Length: 381
Ligand code: PMP
Ligand code: GLN
Image (tube, rainbow, N blue to C red; front, side, top):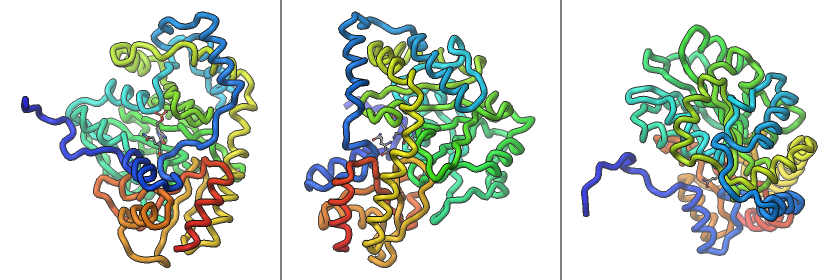
């Protein structure tokens, strides 16, 4: 064996892979990894197939097809009121994950500090560390995961390079509100701090709340990379298609990394997705669609001993289980799979220190019958 110095010592396989495998091994209902168990619209598949049949099978332009960038520019402007130039400020990526990686690789140097809010999506911290950056986690707590900005301030130092935000947040379903945005503007004003805003659940937001995007605040827009994923938007997580928005001076650096990492993303899907999304109702109806699933799942869960945490967005419902027992969340998640046949995600996996508030995350992007069957099993606890 040739010795190599690991970039990520101590990192194993992601919790999503571990729990999905455990679910498969035990023939459990998989509410762990976040993906729909229903198919995307056949019309979308037709559009992609049509693009393949029509010969769109060679490299796309490095930044993505103009058709798709134009659709994204129109969607962003009509939704948030601020324009992004499709020529210089929008890049199509291979999913949200690659957009996150590329934004970080383009900006983080050794010793740079990045503030993240935990529980945090799993790829932020290892990516920052693999680039030589230092992660400064700010831990939020159940039940409401509110951000105490006075405490956040204490994490700032001369080395703070970036803040990563994620609204609606995976796994908590928490959304940023106007007061959070006001604090963020205050904290970053007259600084060189960048923002990476993971907005992959932008259209999955409930109870008439509006998603507050970095795109709609000029002071934040000028320092932000915004990440989006068509996996969430189209019920097609396996397509690994997403995009990044950023002002041109940031996008220039983003593309320098992107062109030598993936160069460009597959062409026929971009053509098909552009055609599909030229009808805005296809993404505007997503909130209602998932709110019905959230409401159904929450109603079903009231028959169990779980306590429901709030869920304002995303397709995840978190629960606590103090009426059931005091196992660690990992032990509880394993027992749910092995003894009750339902897979979830232990939320401690989203904290660097594995902080355990005894919270489990369930994905409700599932058919009604799947949710009903799962809860039939969970009532036995
Ligand atoms: N950010 C968050 C918060 C996510 O939940 C996910 C995936 N579910 C991603 C980024 C990655 O998106 P993609 O699957 O398009 O890479
Ligand atoms: N984003 C999905 C989730 O939170 C999982 C994606 C993955 O498995 N990498 O469950």
